[in-house]
Length: 260
Ligand code: NAP
Image (cartoon, rainbow, N blue to C red; front, side):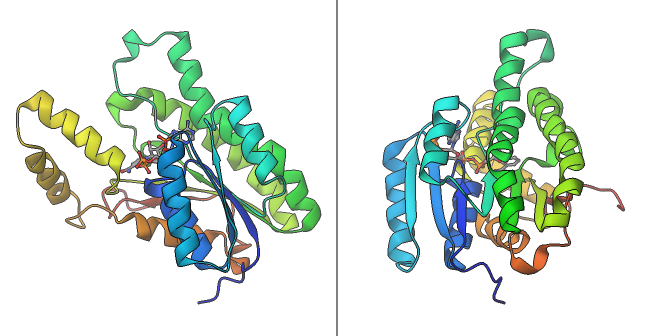
């Protein structure tokens, strides 16, 4: 299926690894020119070089920096000032007990998982409206649909973003600019594996045991493949997806038990 976005420009935040990287790769495969960001310059350069090798017909730009800072966002936007596609992503906040979190912890979580996407939308959405094409996808979390008790910072910050976007997405769709969220459940990325390693250490069991148990608990019997996530993201960015907006698409192998 040709998604009709060949030659478009995308800014894909936090994309040297994991889900962001899968989105960048899926868009590049569709002929989209991609600007990738991450803090670690070395891993980013490696990821960008690999996409250039696989998709020589598209332009791959890499911008090292922390997207949750004003400087990081300015650098990303300088490299890609008028994206047709914006994929908002950043690392998730740490787990913990809300009794131990102060204002600074909350501000940090809000900066990363709510205010950074809003700032980037603010910087790009009017241009999309003028050009009559825009696709914005926010990578949030299954925690938006079903809170995870130890991830209170994530539950709160990401739900704030979701509420804001719910309003704006209905304003921009008239101009063929859609805003949606992808809600990952367990996907096999570095983050999932580092959380599993910490759980294994705390429980004094091998990490493979934690991973096997988590996979068995999921209705699909496995973790999600980041490439599956990238494909869903590319679809939402497709030219023919202009009637899908303000939606929160859960990708969790069926783990959320609700009928709707
Ligand atoms: P990952 O495998 O750890 O990859 C994270 C990517 O984001 C890396 O490229 C990382 O590179 C970059 N990054 C992190 N913080 C950044 C920042 N401040 N500025 C720029 N780049 C940054 O993580 P993932 O599993 O893909 O997760 C992506 C998002 O989905 C996270 O918010 C996570 O909480 C959420 N999520 C993931 C899962 C899952 O199962 N994987 C489930 C639910 C929600 P650098 O470290 O070099 O910056």
